[in-house]
Image (cartoon, rainbow over all chains, first blue to last red; front, side):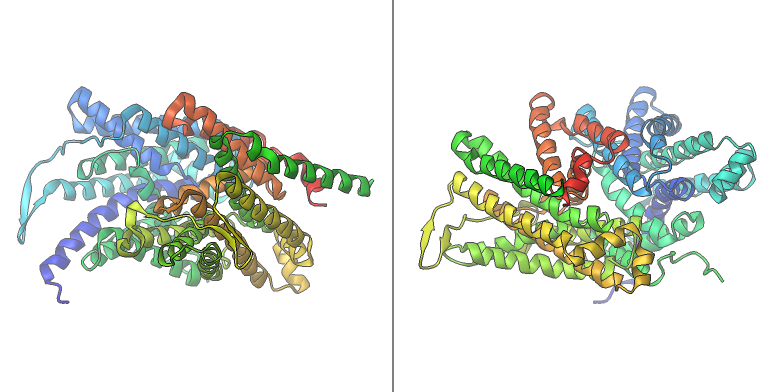
Length: 290
Length: 317
């Protein structure tokens, strides 16, 4: 079957746009895993709740950007609460127990959302409504804006980790928790803050992604699965690896959906994950240690 | 001392078995079916305990084995007239075993969290395949079929009333329990437990750890498939929801609540979870998972050994 060039180009842009959102979700997840060995099963639910807080704030204030900020802060606070109540008691136990605890959290949050907001999907209005023509399509500017914003947030996180005092604390804690503690870094608070930052990033991606699809209580599940794939393929705990893997996998899925239905295109990323685990279990996008 | 404990164990086993045998005569039909379902989910949880409790590998993909057992039974029951119980069992077990062999080959190369995530992803692959091949599986709607008769060729054939169904399931689950218990106490089971305690040392002694792990996953998948077949016969339908990873998550919950590494604990965990669900769904309707999830989190934090954790050594004698 011949695939015209314009379709490939459109799918490339689509792939990069979803890839940036996925990178934003996954970088929060990888931050949490890399720094505290917590596999956060509830990450998708934080994404979903972020989108809901966005819906509510948008209805109250009418401004998308306020909604984005409020949702990020609110979910960051919720993340800190979840960390303090359910994850801090598990420090020092097998990392697998964190999967169990956060799986419980995700069940609770998902059903709270269903109970509070009902099964009908809510809509977030796009803040940027313009279109430009891309071959035969009217391509919305908003999608490109999402990609740019996601890149900006990730870039800000990177700068913060690289140069900010607290960012340096976080990196020190990643490298050696005991030594960091000995140097006077308040490690318990660093861990709480990292969980809050990761949660806030999930919420921000939820609000940004909300206008593209409806907001419903199930939307987190598919994202957390894909984010898991990205985090493993990119190399657990590697920020740049996760971003590269997110774009790589989204592009592959976008191209695959030229031939098969989007539901089946997911299998492509599953296969990438399994191949990665078999041949490069440390991750595709991390330099090989010598 | 040792002998007396063993005596107490078998006495307890006999009493509980006897109670479960007479239960359908005393209970109304709804609770009969409920008890049968507990046994089936308990078998699924028990199969997963082979990995979680005895080998130290947490599988988040047991829904794949369970679901494939279910669809295997469905295939046999839909294609043959009249539906045949033994054919359904054979198809379900073969399909589950095939899938388990495939999953085991790839996933056992990984450890800990990576094993959990890989099994999760594998089960999602099967979910997507079953969900999207509408022509064979009926897609989202699943398959309905008729219940076979309980028949032994040339001897007898009776219809599955809820009570007969209960006794049949009870028989299968009891045999599976005794078999699994025997396996965990065999030299093979001891190697699995030594992998759990110290994998590197087990390898150093000279055991082919990978091969033992593969067999453990296949064994576990086979019994999960058996539970799937029983569930299909009990409810007369197969649906993709049962392949979705939430079922795997619930299986892990049963294990943690009941106490891993005891075989009987996961069964108790399933009973506890399902009874709480029944009770909560009266007050919270479909949002019963909110209080249940909170109880589960509390148990992970405060009671990591589960309800029967205190009896772990004793139950493995």
